[in-house]
Image (cartoon, rainbow, N blue to C red; front, side, top):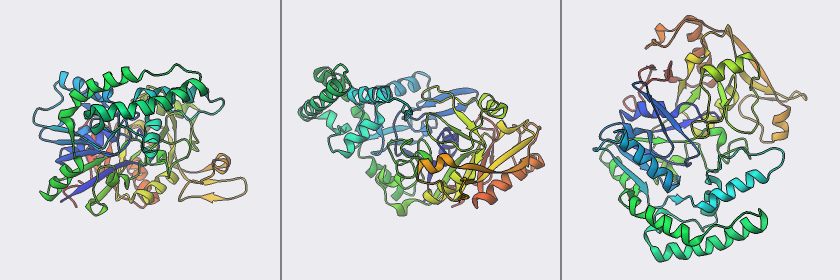
Length: 434
């Protein structure tokens, strides 16, 4: 048995789609454990780009079981459109299976309206939500009034829950936000139609994963976003509404922690962030423009331009500790090609002389006063896209990678030198080497 969790070590957008796609070749089951369609995983196979928001990245491979776990909040319209698109492009193999947890909570139209209304009503600093209704759906889950996938198959229960929820949400929308109400009847009809199409995919996914584990199958747990967007361990309140760290792979799919054998942390060779929130190493100069343009740093879900900056070891160290990361997969190393000097942030320092090296300060006011402490290394100009081993990389590139390993006290398992599936240096297979 070899079960591996893949999580992001930064603010998301670390290239999890490509790495999960690569690791899925060795896995039997690929399970998504949190988030919703506020996250997008981009894969490039044979020059063709595919963006997935809910369906696990392993769907592009034959003979796989793909799971959307109970920790995910599901927008039925988005999921069905994604399935249709994959099937229309012949990217959904007939010998692979997709299952959605019966316990997964469903995003409703009132969640999206509340999400958008809140963001529009805020003056000054906004959270930077995608407006997909993710947060309000998780709120209802915590308040024990959420609608789960299994509820869609019980007409009476669905109508009862909708009636109660629509009364509450419409009061909130009309009285507080001065917005138009939602129609309970229209939502009921719309979601009953979704139920008919989703029924074949609904299952007790915890049981499926358990049975596959007992057969000795390999399970890959796929996270969304990054550790610094975790609702408990991220830069709160500029975070997502779920736990993005590796521990949620267990609760988000229904397996025990003893089942996990390895945790791979995805780390971009520099740092990016979409939306609002603190960003200590952010660059607004020519280097930042280089990273943004060469790295094509646009949000896969929103299309928003990503903010770019130097690699921040402080947040990576925190992620390694919180998620128990056993190896790092470094991505987008090729984007740094052509820069004469590279900087690595090894710590934060406040005007009072306080230094943070292992984790970010909890107070955003303290964090706002922090300045990066940089270590400078030489860059490289050679094309690294064709390298398939460390020895084929330029000397300065290898030094940069060695410094990352030393600063994080974590070994590299994979180095991505291009967007394509084949443009990768594999140093350790997290499945076969367990």
